[in-house]
Image 1 (cartoon, rainbow, N blue to C red):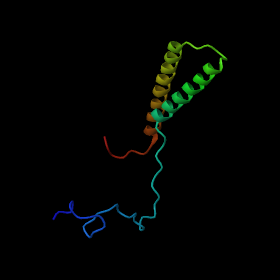
Image 2: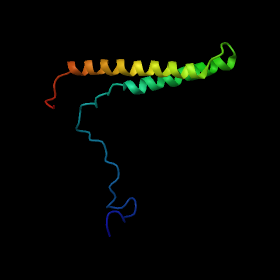
Image 3: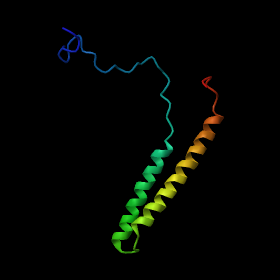
Image 4: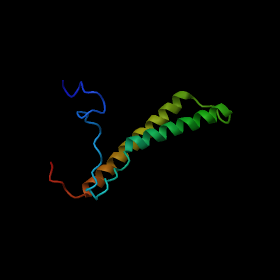
Length: 97
């Protein structure tokens, strides 16, 4: 009988490993990704534009809205990527090429 055939909770059950208590260092927080932030802003902007259009405050042309959002998202991704690369260059070298 292989370990794949063992019933759950048996001696052969390799469940999730318990966290090690002898590691005093907390895990490093990873910075937010530029793409995640940009796409989140796009979703929020679309929601706001839909609400504004439904309230009748302003009449929006869907084509112009999409073009504007794509231009803004593209610019934000390029600028965010450049800033991220610039910040990465200042970090200590890891010895990897």
